[in-house]
Structure formats: structure tokens, C-alpha cells
Image (cartoon, rainbow over all chains, first blue to last red; front, side, top):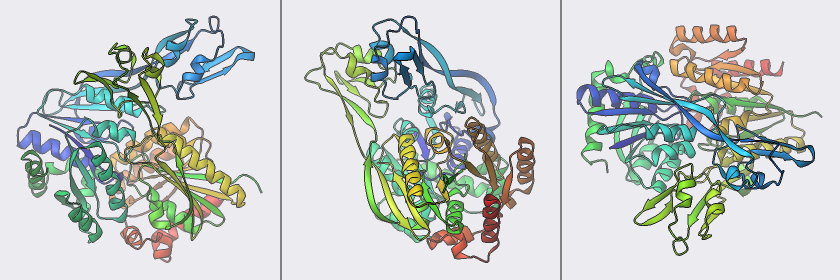
Length: 286
Length: 290
């Protein structure tokens, strides 16, 4: 079963929930589980796991390299490029690929009749396999700073996942392409929210997104304690399964700040996560 | 009147307080125009409660589609697609709409002309006025893409509006992360204010953000929010930033005033103008003015 941990609004506790679930499933319930950090722009799970690297592999895209001696400046490559990544000035015999805009689709070399375009590899990020509780049970996708192809790194990360019984995806925040690249590969989606107007607003967007993609889903309320009833009202009316609540405590925030897995040192929270896991795996949350 | 000074508020890590701080500056600044560039999860309008007077559609994703009656099953598109977006499912070739990046290579290559590409326009741009001035913001269609270009368009409209209004400042709330919508928010801006928190994640994410902004040579100032959550960490971040030559604009303690202001749909400086947080934010704004 593949479970994506998402949020809409950033900073609601995706990584807290992902690492806590990973801990309880592996350590206490003895599941064969793997955690994937899919937030390739800002991967944070490693801060909490402090695990041993076992394998690093780069993520490449093939970007075009144009030979100006062979190029006849016909403009076909520039016209087909959907990403405006080719700049051409025929009068100056100038043609260039804007590497940061290129998605590496290969359309330019396909349409070139002059054999002027060849591919070269560009590294956009890398994927690290780690050993934590078990062999290669944690994989991190990390995009290089400056790249805009986070989605590609995420897809590659998911592609490298193992055959564990449960695979957890720590998703990026928001609702756009990188989130969809993550959620579309999952069987079940956990949405982490907080009881504030921002939390509710972004939760609604996330719910609509997950519905559109057609996945089963449930909610965890983090930093609970603020009597913000519109959130509970929404969950009730939309008939969304409330998987559990994590109370707001300053000591949790402090433990998080130091990179501690919350369930490691808190028994009652461990029980909260046991209940959450039970609801998901027994199908009660569906 | 010269070009307006454009300030973008970013964070790397989400949930550090970007939007609440942007809204506070919006209530202090005079002669400013506002933008929300966090198009995935736009929240600034919840505090600035703008009235929309005009909206327009903006292109969202492109999706390729295969006409099953024309498809001969030659496999060419399947072999060429570098995004693995063509799938063989129940004896038919189909496009996985979430993997398709809309490059158009399959359309070009299909010998049976069976593939077409449709451009959708499900993203929205809103033109509005709030109690502090004009505001332009966007909303990504559900499960839609193209957020980078949507951000670029919002910034362009905001710039046009600021010139029309002779505004001195543009204040923009940015998205979390360091990917395409963030790059799109930063290019050409005059100042980035990065809001961080004293956590290992906050610092990790801030470093990546600073490195990304460094490529554009845009000056960065940092606000450390919830600084009393971990005093040691807060000091370490401050020292590291000093070593990098990045000014710390100010530090704010954890304070539930921010949440209570949010619950009332107000900015911190309207909700509790005499409070510590509001006063600190006013001081920070004065520093920006200088």
C-alpha cells in the first residue's frame, strides 16, 4: 500500500507525520515499510532520520546541444519547443538552448532535418538510498538548487521505491504539479491540516485536488487545541474521515526544532499513531 | 516617479509565517500594491479581504489525447515519449495526463495524425482592491499546472498596476520551496525577505533558498520568526547569516496573537497595534525604508 502524506498549506506537519508513521510501523508494528522523501525542493526527513547512506544515483535529463556548423537556422526546433527554451537569431547565425527552461522532451532533435542537434546529459538532482531500521528503507529525492524540474526528481524517486508492504510518500506542500506527481502514484492520501483559517482554506483545495485525481483520503489535525470549529464542521459535512489529532504542545515544537521523531519519546502520541494506522490499514478510513 | 521597489516574501520551508508577515507589512506600507504569488495555496486574501472587480482566465495545463479510431498501434509515440506518459492499457494506447508535460512531440511524430493537444485555461487571475490598496492574486485550477507562468503574469500585472497608481512599493507573498514558482517570483525583484524559524528544517530550507536567490543576485534579508522556540538554534542561524553577510531584519517570538488576528481576518498590526509583534514589525518596515 502506498500512502502519500500531503497538506496544501506548508508547515502543518507532513514530515512530522511521515517520520512518526515510519517509526511506529517499523519499530513497533514490525511492518516491512519504506519512506520516500518526495519533497525534492526542500527534503527534510533526513534531518530526523540521520540515517546511513547506502547508494546515491544522479537524476539526468537529456538536453539538446546544437551544432551551429550544421544548423541551417530553419527554426523548426524553436517552433516546436513548448517551453520557449530555444533562442535563435538567424541573421547573426546565433542559436542557443536556455538550459534552465528545457524539459528534455527531445522534440527539437526529432524535427531537426540537419542532424545538428545531439543530446547531452544534465544533472538536475540526485536520489539517495539509506538504511535506517532496515536495508534501503528510506529514499530521498533532492533537486539541485536552481533547477525547476522538481517533478522529474519526484517521479524518479518513486520509480526507485522497493517492494515493501507499505510505502510512505512525504509530499511537497501545495496542490500543483509536484504534489500531483506524488499523489497520483499513491493508493491512499493523508492530508495534514491545522485548525486555522489558512489551514482550512488550503485543506479545501487539497480535498478537491485529491477527489479529482480519484484517491481515497483521510485527515490528521496537527497543532490541535484551538477551537476553530469551521474546520471540524467542514470535515463533518464533507464526510471526510478524521484519522486523528496531534495536540499543540510547545515541547513538540521544540523536539521538532532539534530534529527528533515525535513518537520516539512520547507514548501517548505513539498510541495516536497506532489508531491512525489501524483506521487506514483496516479500511475503516475508506 | 521611478520604478516601484518590489519586495518578495519567501521562506523555503512552509508555515514559517510568510503570509501573516506580508499582511502586516501591507497594513504599514503607504502607497503600495500587493500580490499573492503563492498560487497553489493563496491565503493572503483571507487577511486582506479584497474586493474583486475583474478576473481573467489564464492557461493551465496542456493535455495530449489519442483518438482511438485513428490510432494504428504503431508504438512510435510510446517509444519517443521521455516522460513515460504514453501507456498501454487494455489493448489501447493512452496518455497519462499527470505525467504528460505537453511538449507536443507525440503529436508531431504520429503518422496517423491520431494525437491532438488541448490547451486548458483553468487558472484564474483576480484584480481587486483591499483596504490598503490594489491587490492582484491568482488561483490555480484544481489539479492544474503552469504555476511558474501564472506567477510571472501576476507579477507583470502588479507592476503595471503600480505604475498606473504611482506606487512606491510592491509587496508580494511568495510560495514555499525553491522550484519553478519561486524562481518565477524572484527574478528581477529588488529585495527578498526570507522568513525562517529556529528549527533544523527551517535552517536547512533557508540555506537552499539563499543559494537559489544568489543566482539572481537579489539582496536577501531574514526574519527569524518564533525565535524563542529554540534560542540556541536561533543564535546559530543568526551567526551563520552574519558569516554569509546576510542581514537579520528582526526576530519575533512565538505569539498566538498571529493566530488570533488570523481568526478575525485582520493583520497583526490592526489586531493588536500596541503589541510587541506589531511594534517589531513596524521597526522592521522602517529599516526597509532606510
